[in-house]
Length: 342
Image (cartoon, rainbow, N blue to C red; front, side, top):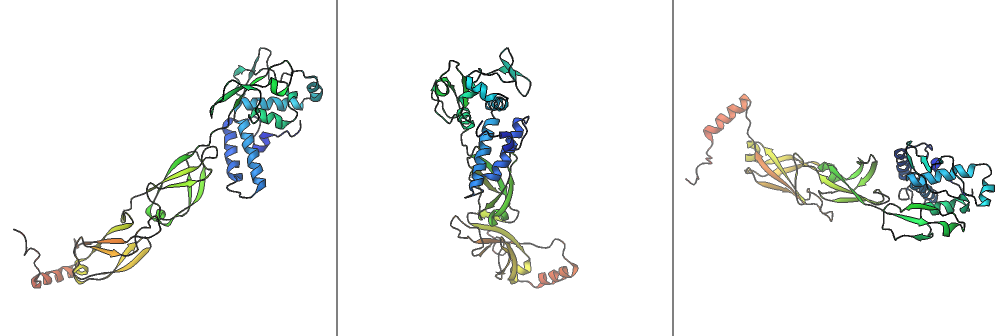
């Protein structure tokens, strides 16, 4: 038969492959030859069409059965002679009682005998089995995702044998959503990240910087049947930084002497440690501001980092430090309880 395509070879599976093996082979090849991954590559585009067609036929048990019957029939010796007579032919897998065994060994009702001479070439067979051609009468207009009963006798051959078969419509494109939790530093920086989806696929993606909880990232063509995949982002809580809009809040401990005398201290930021000057006499709970060290907003403009001062005293001071604190207590004039309201 002209233009015959071996779908098993195209997917790289054996004729005895299970449906799950066929699905895995298709996913692997689809990722390799998808047009989005090979822009402008006509060879990859044609390869993608071939593997999609092979999968659509072999993954459906009814279509696969018809394809296998055709494959056995056209290879038989005397094919052309039988085809020219218009006689119907039983394939080797059919039993005299009208049932045939499927790959799992269970019996099912066989389709009525098909005269494969009605197809001038393999493309005609594919158009029929995939429903690409308007053929004969349909009992109703089928909604997306349903099947249609088609009478093919008037469309393909004028003989007296009537052949009925079921043509399933192509699966709908469907967008899917997955959840991805990122540490704050990764959400801020963005960059290349490898993720593993629930269906077993592993993808490497370029993520933008400045992502926030609730944001969705679209991955074109990575959903079901060519739909899109949306990653819903969750930014994990951080032990030191806390997001307040585009500002970042942190609590920074200082010693009593640093609080009294002030001076330069190091403060962690998302960009690394920076120097900040603490004013003399800073109070506990007072907030100091580091301009443009916060989080980027939707326009890429960064907020500020707010540094809340926490005065921390030593619980077990060194003996020399304790001696100095004793001397300080004797000479200090400051009394924080002098102006109590009661």
